[in-house]
Length: 299
Length: 271
Image 1: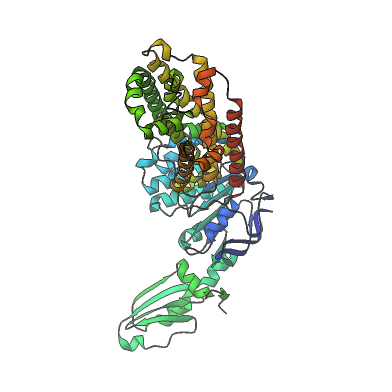
Image 2 (image 1 turned 90 degrees about the vertical axis):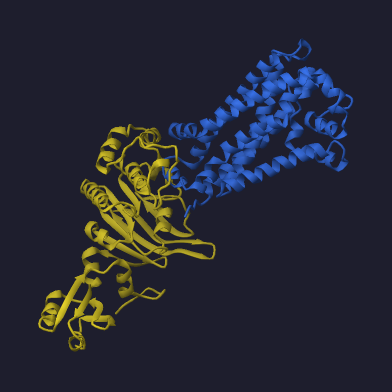
């Protein structure tokens, strides 16, 4: 059963495009990654889901309830982290937990302290003295502390150091294991790869992919960079599986569609000085899978 | 209405309330003492200047050249521009905080994603605003009482009459607040919202002033909210200005309801 569902969801800002006919379905207990470059429509989609924006057309439902008309009921069981966490400068962690607890009708301080310990955040620090990363941690604590049925996180790790990113990922995994659903946006493919069961990609306001990570991985290919020992080696004809996008003197950069082993075998004895094979970042992925504004899939 | 939102509003409001309360108490105490004490000097010097006469007439709503008696001097602390400015400032600061202020600084995202309806947020904020407004006005009354202790008996005003004036001033405060809620509900920026309300209040003040000597302004003076706040009449006969208070209250309530309807329906965009 889908805990979050949108059908032909459209939101425009006057003449400006926001999102167009977005169809999503997120099952309960899923770690769902919502990917896209900056300005693709991730935040607009999320803002419609959490009731900050009204859809221009189409519908968005969470727990089977309309996100605009039943916004209050939905929010009892939602934890939300905005992309750019801003809080009242006078607020400190303890006061925030007290206020949030009063609003939600339960004592959130014990759970908040536990989370603060994991995030290594001093709850007595006022927001005005906090760095962006600390604000992000407090925002995460406030989103997670009431153990919501659905977590909606807009780029949750963007300002965190790698250590804290790992903590966040660990917590999200734990929550998903307990049956909570996590819907989070990101433009970092690595993070999504580590975490998500399923991903949707948005570009130019439209969903261009919505599939499991395994399917996406297969389609993504590998980013390959080869540095040849000499010009003779660099003059080789690439194998069919390798699309060379850039040739610079002795260096090739491109995408490998297919398994790595035959490619490595092809390279062996051809005078390779240096080689890197890795997953492409999201921007590269988009470049390879989709062409132009029409988001036409590559054959 | 939500206790948590009210708690948040109290945290946000207390510095402005404390500041406005102390300021109002101080100004009331000073004006309540100075004007009646030095009324003879005022009458002999300042009140002879035509502009001052017109200005005082506009403030008090009487002909200052002919009707300037003890009540008029006792009414000064309640119509003094600084007093009105402090009361209005508190209303402006309180009523533009949500949503305009919160959209402006980006905190509305978290506020609106808490399990409270927008009407609930507005109602909670409004209760705190009204509560803190009462505190500010009572501080003004306390200041006035202190200042009045040092003036001659003739210029002392019974507490009951002061309370009637205070009620009238409170209705004026609610009307100004209602306007501020309305502008705030339609705005994404607090600064411009405050400026718009301030301009309307200034226009009202100006209309009140011009109506003293310009017949066109006099004919439309009922449009200005200061037309419904005349402490000197309360001091003169002790009557409760039910009509004026009802008008101000109605303006405040209607504007507040429209503000709520706009806030409940509007999109909130901070990015």
